[in-house]
Image 1 (cartoon, protein in one colour):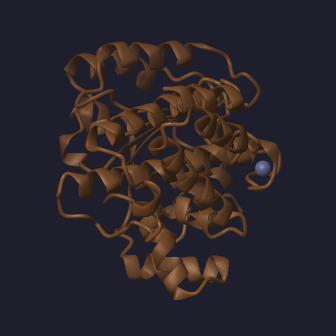
Image 2 (cartoon, protein in one colour):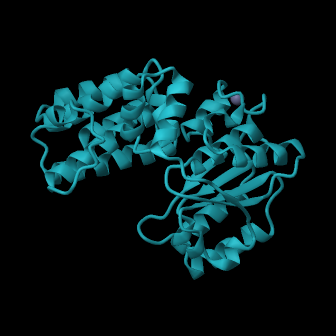
Length: 314
Ligand SMILES: [Zn+2]
């Protein structure tokens, strides 16, 4: 069940399922493969399978919070900039020294593992050599050759295959009973992130798109009342807020690319330029920073009303 959302990677699904069935899940993995082919989806699916009382039902509170990256025992780390710095490695080590908050263990995902340098890599060696019981580290990379060999050699490597857009679209159509046009639109809006595209094609996907567009409109408006009204509406569903923010981020980035006259990826839904009219590149950069700040706040368990208010007022 947990691997339902991991489509187009039958080899990885089989491998992880068989490890789970045999209770020999490695304490460290290196998931590698092309961008947006399901590596993080697989890591989250593994967390669900490990920590959900039903083995990864996808429906319960545990599964939903893992999906939305708000579960206290499933944390995602990524470099702040070009390098995963030693301070960040120490923060990860500190987390790893804590007992699980509620699950049977803890799972840490380290995205862009190729950005570990000698010092941060060395700091993490202890974690790889002496893992706590029930603790798992999943390193994710699109560039396995650049991952420090001292790190890579201590992980179980798992290779992911590319997911061509046509396959992604076909899988989306099947999974959500969507038309080809809708599936293609969702896949592109989600920037090729398959699980995000699946989310968009849920019945409430339109509401998320409307909320994301509403954020662009509120950001473009000088009215503080309009911004706060958006914040009030958006905070009603805390579980959905992360995907609304991610979607608004994709749109804002696309608008920025267009405002700077760089080649656009044509991912943008037709309405976004209308909603984001009046936003200069500086505005868009500030908006992207504000979205990132709200996302960070949510990850630190700030309440949804506060997170949206931060966003509205930044
Ligand atoms: Zn569950």
